[in-house]
Length: 446
Image 1 (cartoon, rainbow, N blue to C red):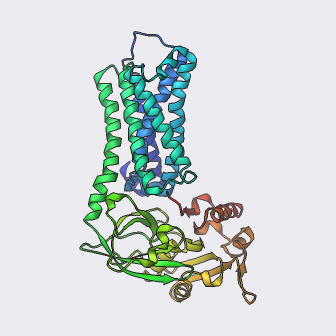
Image 2 (cartoon, rainbow, N blue to C red):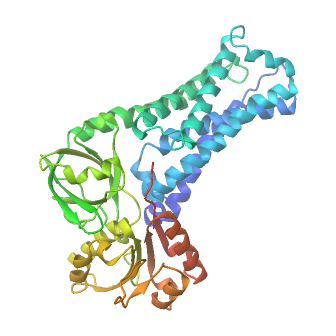
Image 3 (tube, helix red, strand yellow):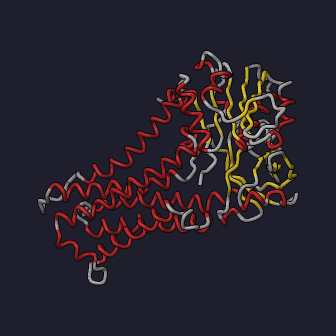
């Protein structure tokens, strides 16, 4: 079993899915051991209770999904895990909300438990936990519309999540129908405690570890397209090694305990831990201040993360890299690393930019063509009259002209704005590129 997991990424991914389902469902199944015999409750009551317990277990597992555990992240990529976290949180929220609704329908007298001033404490815990969960979902789904800054929202998100699961457990213990036996209370308390310990790891232990391995800003380099390359050098340690195409979370000029971190892809070679470069486009409040960062500024890194890397496909015949704008960053890391390793496989880069002056790494890519079997296709949305290259958008017709005839012989990497990524993905499917050969990296992880 162990050798199979080590050899096959698919087997590892299936293994973690099995663990997730096991932790979600087994605690519920254990509750059925030595079931209460004092009452004979109807099907819908029992069904609603089961939904509540499953929802509570799923909520506890959300802490594992957001803890950036390398063994789990390496199987899927952190962007997929975070998207799964968002969607499965809504499922858990729905299950927990259905639980009291079914009770109210089947036992209308339980509506009086909503009067928190007169209800028993177990009902008060349920109401408070549900309110915390509702606020958590609303502030998460509509954070941008509500204009809640990311850092305060992240703190609020953690507090609400902890409150919801602790109050949910307190409610279940207070009802004590299925948790009447001490060992069952210990089991469920252990599950919730594990979730809280993961929160402590993310908020306390991991930042403490980061303070022991600081970095110093060595240089800030201006690039075309309003992009700035932030060069960091490890201070007092050897730095981190990474696979080309991966990213890290950067905390700049403040303590990592402040939780004000931002994810960026490395744009330098993966074989040089002594100097890490992050090429950052000036788009938001934080990124627009990168150009003003002074050499010597202290920084902290949490990483590397991501499965968007050519290193995982050593047996591929070649690679097709499709980038839009600042999506060139991980591609640049892949190409620089391949050049240093004298990789003789063919690379095709299709690079969409607003204009010729906006092409980040334009000169660097020309130099790489002398070191690699690299073909670069620039696609400009706004081209001068004398431009003889491709214009418009990266669509099906353009891809059909350039990608290899034997579609499955290459691995395809896409990093761009969501609209372009969706369009390119559909076009590659239409061109019979195997879905297992398509890899995407999303800009927005928060």
